[in-house]
Length: 185
Figure 1 (cartoon, rainbow, N blue to C red):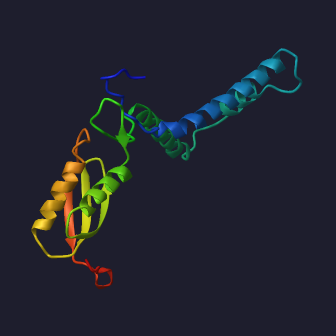
Figure 2: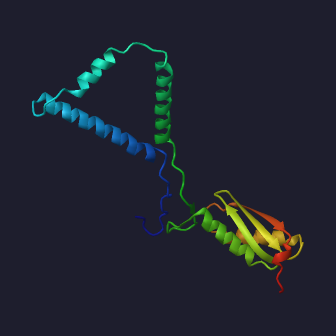
Figure 3: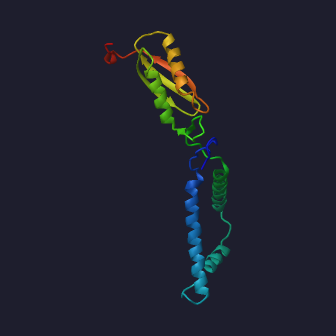
């Protein structure tokens, strides 16, 4: 919980270890169940043969085989990948708004804001935007070929996105209207 005037922490997405963690936990759970069963067998509370000594016997009888080299190398790479996934920074979930309230926007929300701002500029029939953390690209269908329209749309979109903590770069593409989309104004 943040206090007034204190910035909220960045919202982060679950990292790739979030997938491997439950799998590794399941493996450890199975190992724990096998060890508990062997303990009960050794204590005479369960009948049967202990599993761990049988596995160690089988492992002791293994001889070197050529297929063990690529399997060992593959397991080492999987281990290194899991270590990397555990220590790398997690991706950020939203784009922070410059406020002390902890407000974040998704890329879709930023794209909607940019399209709305572009649509309010005179001479724009429609606007479509794709947005990311660093760049916003707005494609505008215009009523005219006025070269100043792109600058006006860029200013409007930049002003609308100025409240983001790190405003993205704005790029505007002008397209001539399609014949079937002309409106009478």
